[in-house]
Length: 149
Image (cartoon, rainbow, N blue to C red; front, side):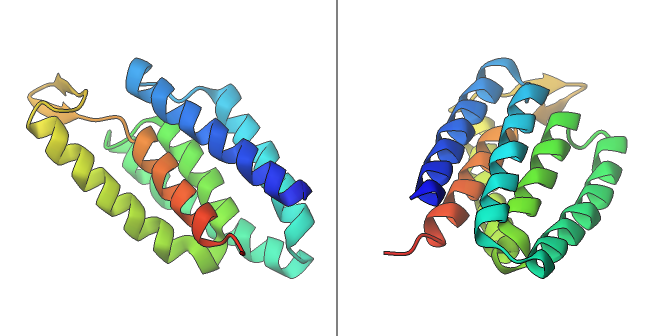
């Protein structure tokens, strides 16, 4: 029962993060920290020490790669931090589903923003979209897909 409650709390937090990013174009550190705390609690309740190390290794590798995207201006720092926590949570087993869902949601959002159907900003002639909704949506997809009946 505590696992279900933690997953529900994480889904609610992710929904809040998505809406807040849409509104402010920021992913706040306090929200990333809350997602990290919920993730660590879920891992502690559901994974072995070896599993946890695989989750941590994946998150570290992804964070290192994402820092390059941040350095190149392709994404913000909040996006990088939230993605690192997301990869920590989903781990190797959920990473493919997460990446595919994120790609699909980001492309849908980009299309909607291009058609002026979703919030976006133009900076230096480039279209900038918030990645928080896509990250949150993809993470929720993995959480729901891992739910047992």
